[in-house]
Length: 245
Image 1 (cartoon, rainbow, N blue to C red):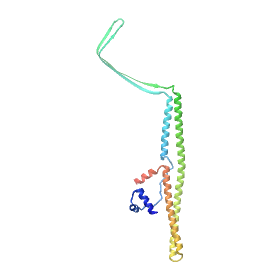
Image 2: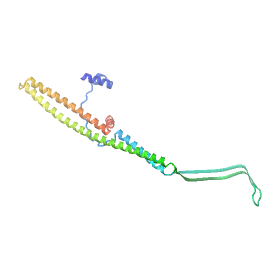
Image 3: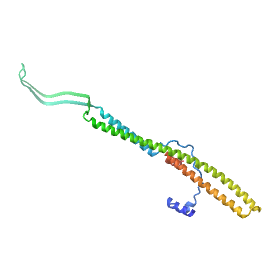
Image 4: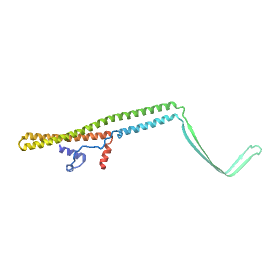
């Protein structure tokens, strides 16, 4: 089993078998200073919140289509003419008047104002668009609420599994101490001839089984810990913090 495990690790890590054999890792439980009680860091929640916010803006935009569009405008003109000839005909009293000028200059004339545009003949289209935007917003809110409720239930289950796994580790550790004491006692009794070799081997086998169960419980606790971090959406942050430390 160890050789098979080393072969798998060699394939997954691209490390040599000799390098892997030099690694010694003390298998321990994963401990947290605090456990998040929210699933807001989940990517699904953030995505649905962003979609819902976008739908809200779209709904407000469509509702605003009932109102007139307000716009501002500005204009500025400037006249400058050379070699200009202006003639006025049929002018009472004065008769014909002719105006010749080589240069005419008029100061800039500016105009600013505010206008309104109101599409009053598209009411039915606006109503349909508003209704469609409202339905899409309701659907988005329902999805967000449904996802939050499901993740909260999953979070409750993951926390329960995590606490149960921790308790099982404590129980397994106590059983290991008891089995170790029984093995020492059986060894002493065997050395002085109070028990035979069968009872001595039985105590040793029991000690082996209890130790194996203890490390299996640690593995289960680590799986429950990782699953809890995945449910809360804190797994990536935890990995990054561990790498920084």
